[in-house]
Image (cartoon, rainbow, N blue to C red; front, side, top):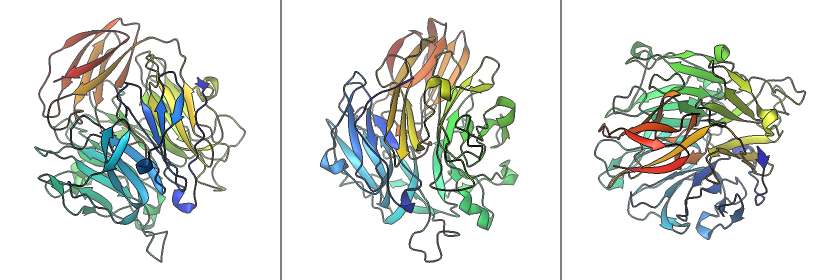
Length: 477
């Protein structure tokens, strides 16, 4: 991969910006090329416009030049076909309405309001027949608690719409200092539940990773439901069907080893650890000479060499100056092999820098069918890499439906090729403070075509269609 020149941008700030540092990728000017909106912490956030040739121009309208921003997620909240933005902040969170041509303004008619807190995670889904999405903001430490920061984790805030407006949020408690969250229909029952990954503060009160059943009154899955208590210093969630059984598996970043967990097919939310068996621990730096444990942040699945097997990217970096953790901690690029194991290729790919990385994005920036890479760094410049791989064939698929939930969040894409079955759930959330609303990328290996169908959010099954390799397709309901 080749690092390209982009306008200088740094995520910076004091202890409130040790975490966060995300990037939103979406097309804000309708030219098909993904643009970047990058958190700045104490610096103003920046919008970078993609010129189509992997050149970027910083063109930040006043309404997006926001300080205190930890991350952002693109979402079409009002289903008007123009992408909006959920803004995560140290301060009041914001929902901005897209007006076209990369312009935004506050929503004035949906009732959303936010108080002052430290927000570090976000996810969204559509429930039932609601016209507006359900939103959840994951919070970190209660900065107003004089006993903090330890034992002062704040509650997550769930906004469920009532008609065409939002009421005051529901507090999801206990909160254990959330750093990533994801609405996912993990059992493919037609209902998305909320997975939450939490930081180390929860050890003080015996907390754990969480999965909320999104019933009329949300409740935590417990051991009697099949949920297994699981503790790590959770930073990011990535979700993808790795085993080919049609159900999403998860990758969880942490301080120390990262966790790959496979879903044990059934009606209970049980996952088994496959980290050591598949070689995905990424628990210490692979170059640079620092043997202390790694610190993982953003994680993402994607097929970097288009061989039909998903790979894993992990953004790494010391929180600040933690002496027990590596200071030279290069980002990981774990390529999946034909036997299902993963091998480290970060240094060979040219992405093994030693900056304190945080958020990131795996996205085809120049529409050449290869996944490129964006990395946000704390107190160091943004990195953007072009993937010049000469791997296999590919497909890029986006979904559209009329009316509510235009981007079909909650749908599943099923793709059959000579490589087998690939299943992709369309979600908003996960990662570390970083969100994407872009075409779904599939590697095909040597297959020159694939059969594709969509299971739409309400469960309706679309017909199987044959698509030629190396094309971009919008599938409309």
